[in-house]
Every structure is written in C-alpha cells, then in structure tokens.
Length: 52
Image 1 (cartoon, one colour):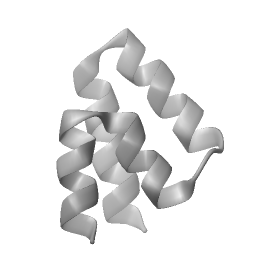
Image 2 (cartoon, one colour; image 1 turned 30 degrees about the vertical axis):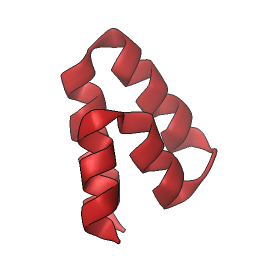
Image 3 (cartoon, rainbow, N blue to C red; image 1 turned 90 degrees about the horizontal axis):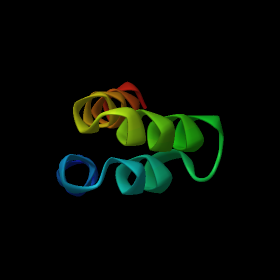
C-alpha cells in the first residue's frame, strides 16, 4: 500500500498525504508546498509516507 501512496505522491503530492494522514496540518502544508514548488511538495509527501 505504501508503494501506491508513493507513486501517487510523485504524481500529485497532496493525494498521497491525504491517504496517509487525512485532512489535517500536514495535508494543508503539503498543498502550500506544492503551490510554491512541485518538488518541495513531493519531498514532503514522501517524507510523511516514509515516516509513518
């Protein structure tokens, strides 16, 4: 299941974070990071998935 989340995080970072932690602080932070730059959003999403 984590592999699917990581693939989704590379394609669309907020979706991967949403599937891992739901709607919360990390989800909104990831949306902000993705808006500011795609790569920071991907890095944050993969970190959140790997951390849990």
